Length: 117
Image (cartoon, rainbow, N blue to C red; front, side):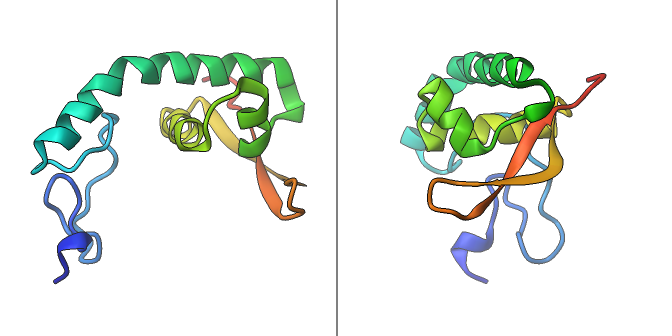
């Protein structure tokens, strides 16, 4: 087994024992600096999620792609996408089943608020 096939909690990605995302910032548990970095950003995650929720609320049924959210909010893709994934896991945002082209012309999922969440 490759070292990289293990998740943070030690479960294996490929044998069916991997656990669902815990909601905490990801880190490499055996690295003190990784754990410290994850702990240092924990408070910023809430603000990032709130920013995306406000933006998607303004977009209503039109929704937004990840690229559109990044452009509108000024968030770095490495910050925005994990916050959107957290919102999906929390049931607050969902895939609209629609796509729109990105700047490069590729199809991208349009994300919308999950009504009733």
